[in-house]
Length: 476
Image (cartoon, rainbow, N blue to C red; front, side, top):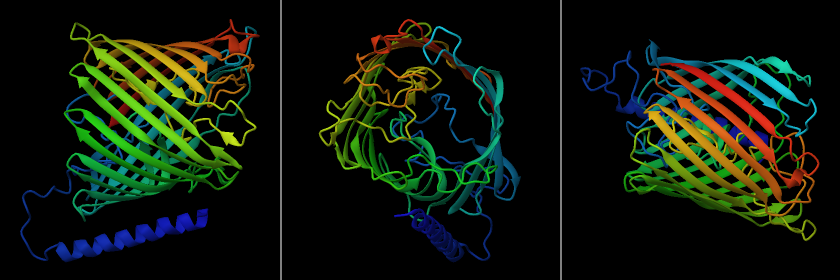
């Protein structure tokens, strides 16, 4: 399947669903009947307004209800302010700041960058009837370099973050989405990306299922660029997911993801696995991710496995203290010359972010190192407190070992590579503070420090530092 065929399929599906739902609406709408008092007035936001879907959103595999959701910086803004018949607006403004030091792990004056990024992200929703909904969310980002040792261009971007059509209520429990939409799972282990896609979801009571075909940047994302954007991997993704919720806050899901590389190679990985999370007891939370990847890549067979498991114990005391332990392992390749690549590989669209017991999501494999789970073992321990219901402090420690000593750390944000002579990558400590005590305002502060291990034998005593903050005001 090439780009043209996917684009034609997307346009055809949009046209067919639009025509079908308009016909259904025309047939079912009475010509002269009094207004139904239960009908939502045109100047009020519909209950389903916004991008949330049963199987596509943060509610999939997570508790719903009045609980405070953790601050998710990538969550689509709500559009609930009426500005016209069936037309609503919302959005947010935010300020993001980040500084990093010594990412080359050198004691000399190395790379140090500090940036501030004001962001304006309006959202518009149009729902002409109970069957159709159109959602659009452009995002304007203006990065400003405050400190820059290595000159790096800072370019203003106007990105089409989300733009999709939703067809709903034709079949109870079923929804179809066409366009640029958000793909996530509960721990962002597979997806945390906005992609151009056709996606069908169905939910019946505690069971939900999802099928989709997607590609990153099939349509240009940055509206200010003249030239087309080139995705470095160019995968077309075929995804299936089934989830079952049981008990009060537990779920278990099975997934399969087939990726067909189009541009740079012949990689065709197939990932299948299981996701589960919830509570073993009232105050003991758990998560479990496990997967195997098969297929081929440039003539080599792919044979990788991974697991990520952990527990969070919450204590019913003042400040609600909690303790977390976790272990993640992705296989490596001991023999690169045997035509079998035994490295586990994540999808390439993962975010690897979650909360423990706080109100802010963070990168659970390390804010500084931020690796992919390939050829890697990550041991995690965490302590958390919540002085108030909407304020949390998390102190998290990570210890890293490679499965097989290698000169690469997949996905690492560091500017230097290990020597390949030791498995000991190092350790990291992160402090994450979240606050949502002011209505419509969300804040997050992160401070992280990476301690290099013996894998960086020449400069192992010089670490990398990250500090970041995010202030966001939502209007809806």
